[in-house]
Image 1 (cartoon, rainbow, N blue to C red):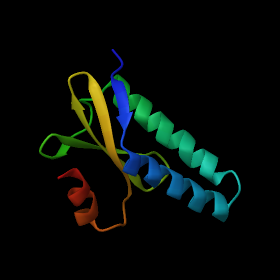
Image 2 (image 1 turned 120 degrees about the horizontal axis):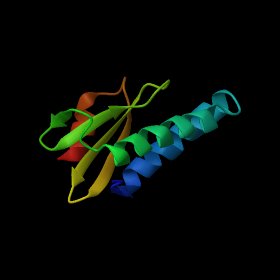
Image 3 (image 1 turned 180 degrees about the vertical axis):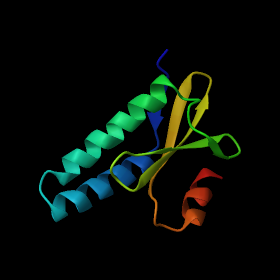
Image 4 (image 1 turned 180 degrees about the horizontal axis):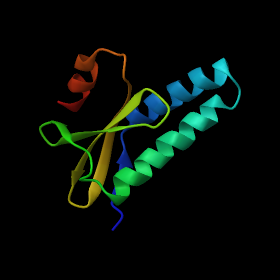
Length: 99
């Protein structure tokens, strides 16, 4: 069963900023990034319990080909995505967003 999906505005901003950064570096690369993020989100929605919990009830899924992690929570048949976070950033930043 596919879970309902809610993407926080901050997570959407993360996606938009990364898209622009990759697209500026090489035309088409931003589209590839979006495709990989979308694939990861689809897996999360199909199997929300697949990924390990990293803090309380929050889980982390890694985006294929790009150094990004998706932080989300699954509750009551709904997936809440809180952050699309570059892996080299300070972990305290994603932690602050979740709490």
